[in-house]
Amino acid sequence: MQTSMAASTARAELEGALRRDPGDEQAWTVFGDLLSAAGDHRGELIALEQRALASARDFERKVLRHRIEELTRAEYASWLGPLAQSGDLDPGLVRGFAMDPQLRRHHPKTLEQLLAIESRTGALLRTLTAERATGCTKIAALLRERGLADLHSLSLPDPAFERVAPLAKLDGLRRLELARAAPVDLASLGQLDQLDTLVLPSLRADLEPFADHGAFAALRRLDLSFHASPRLALGRASGRGARGDEHALAPLAGREQLLELDLGHAGWTELAPLAELRSLERLVLASTDVFDLRPLMSLTALRELDLRGARALADLSPLTGHAALESLRLAYTRVRDLRPLRVLPRLKMLDIEATPVASIDDLMAMPALERVIISGSAITNIDPLLERGVQVIGRPPVVTPSWRELANSLIRGDG
Image: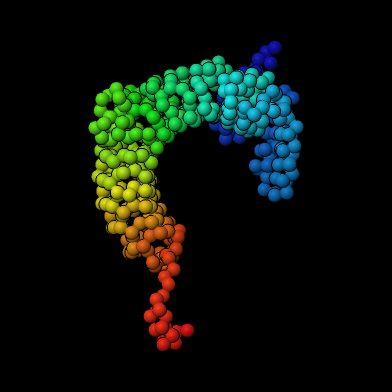
């Protein structure tokens, strides 16, 4: 009895460790031994996977992979029970466990079945996707009941509900995606003190919850791409939505802990509220109406800046102090003067596709440049860049000689 309890405790501890870090091969080894001792064929599967990873011989890897596929086919039905033939679930199996499942239909029922399988196939559940879920209350309750409140990542694309407060009970959640959502209680997610990444593409709600400095304490990565309406982002309740997007972004001003922010593919113009985000390392402003980069002058920690498709942008002079900048994307902008970039000591990648840039002089003066995208630009000579060892993506257009040039060439006997 005590031996059985000890094995059960050890298994629960190993399951928790692997949910937190699925790359811990030492934990996998111990877990595999425990499963083999219990007569679970996934112990053999884990051993085969690890041998295949460690093998340096191609033939041996192929033999091991063949055995892995055979074992998986033979045991698939026992691992998934009634869900094996169901179209309601893509199990996302990793070494026989549903670590990354996708619920397609009947979301709470399918999740309940998965977590009830006797072989504990859902015990290592780490990330969960539920497409077009009609609610999140039952899903959150099931995860908590089965000890999975430490779920790493939850994705609810196109949710057919407006209230997300039940998700605040998943206190170990680190990443949450709510694509095309219109939550009325977004502020409730501010209670998730482990939430590191919040992905809200095509959000149809205001940004006011982010103004609470005591909420979203662990948030480091925020995706607000394709926002439905920047000029109304403050919402009707505030009565300020129609006053311009400088007010719409105001709730982000206090998010000084953010490392990554995506505001791409929306009509943002005014960036003044971002001036306080001095920890930002990655900022996406692709396909926005941005034209004035002066508010970014204080963001000297930036390593990546994406301005592709910001067609109103022409002046790069505010970027001269960005010594940490390594990647800059300027494709499809009006930028033609790259002189402000000459002083950037770490700029390795530059995208000037479809810009009016015509000279490579500024490119040659950039001390760290390793890769440049010139497709569709006005540049006609790339040989000095190639001689310097810079990787050039795209080639200058072939210039067809005029009839006069052809005639002169024939007269000179150039062939």
